[in-house]
Every structure is written in C-alpha cells, then in structure tokens.
Image 1: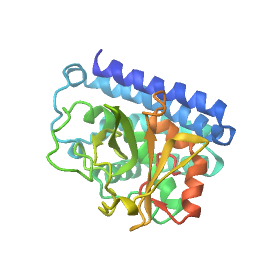
Image 2: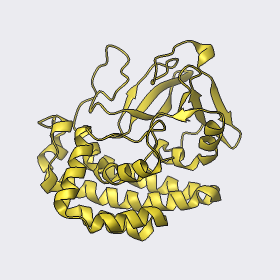
Image 3: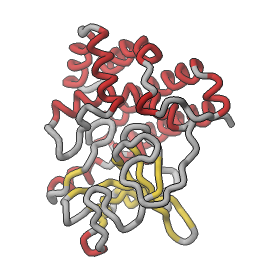
Image 4: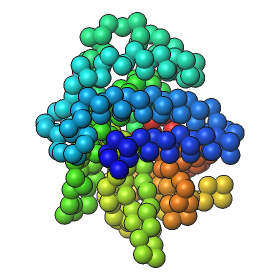
Length: 283
C-alpha cells in the first residue's frame, strides 16, 4: 500500500466512524456531520497535494526543506475558496458567517493568515487562550492546512526519541490528544500533534503541560457512557488531556471519538480543569 492509499484509507475510516458515532450519540450528531464534510474536503485536498508531488508520495522521501519551512501558497491557495464554501454550507451559523466574511477578503489576506499559522507565529487556540473569537479564527487555517501538514509529515521516517518530547518531533506542534495503544498486557501512551496529526510516544505518568510526574497529582477520570475515553488531568496546573484508550475499544478513531465525547469536556470544565489545546472544532 502506498502512502497515498494509506492516507485515503485513514480519511475513510474517520468518515465511517463519524457516521457511526453520530447515530449513537444524538447530542454530538451536528458536530460530527460537520466534521464529516470537512473530512471529505480534506481527503480531496490531500489527493490533490499528493498528485502534485508524485515522487515524494511514491517514495516517502524526506521533504526539503523541513515541514515548517515548506509552505507553498501556490499549491494550496487555489483550493481555499472551495474550503470556505464548504464551511459556509455546512457549518453552524456563526462559523458559516465567518466563512462568508473571509471569502470577501482579498487573496493576499488569505495568504498572510495561512502563512502565519503555518509558521507557528500565530497564537494557537487553547483552553488558556482568548476565547471563542480566537477559536473561530484558528479553525480556518488549521482545518484547511491539516492535510498539507499530514502529507509532509508522513514522508518523514519516525524519529528515534532519546527522551520524552513535549512537542511533536516532526513539526514542533503541541499535543491536543492522547492515545493508548495495546502493548503486551497493557497500553503504551502516545500524544497526537494538533498541527500535523501525527503521534509520538510519551511517558504514561507525566503531565505534558507542566511536567508533573507524581501519580497522586495525575488523576484519570472515565465516564460510564464513554469507557474508552479518559480525562487525563493534572492537579498541579489544572490542565487535562483527553485520551482515547484503544485497548478498550479497538474500533475507535482518536480524532473522531474525541469530538463525540462532549459530556466529558463539560465535566472537566465544571471541575475547573482546562484543555491545553482544543480539537479541530474547538471542544
């Protein structure tokens, strides 16, 4: 299977899981249906990017220059208006209105916003951030450019980590989600990058926000409704990271199951824990 085929399969898995969870959890159906439309667009954009880079996609060679320096506005900009149209058509009203306003801006403004996000110089929406307006602003470059970042990251061999990395070793992005994958009789912990969506191994007992490593300060909460979704909290910095436990549900797709677990997000906020970095849709 080529890298492109693997990526196409991954997008299809996200779509199938979103459809399934929308049927299981009515409260998350609207969010998941919008996510599905965004995922369809992302799958199409990924295919166009791969087609424009056939040698890289076929051979998995390391891109040059590195990810954060590889932004090619000419490659992606022709597809941005179609992305805005998708958001305007399927998003909740406030986000749809933002898409309409952005569509009226000149292309130079689009390029500046996309390039700023890509370089990492733009502020990244977190639970410690400036609120809903910033979350909306960050959605557009993040959702649009994620397939591009994923494509570039997937060309790079997984690096050998000599120590626990708090930032993505491929692009320097921040983690926004955890994953437990089965290993032996237990599970190995990974973090998911909020920029390129790749995973890297991370210590089980360590807060990725402040570095707390005392077990009693790192409680884990699980709801009966979502036995495979964990709230990995830190009493020291009062942050939390959602984590998808694939040892309990091997059918889960972390990027999708995180969106469906809205009650856990509300529970965490009610108990004064804040999410370090929101998911794609700001929850």
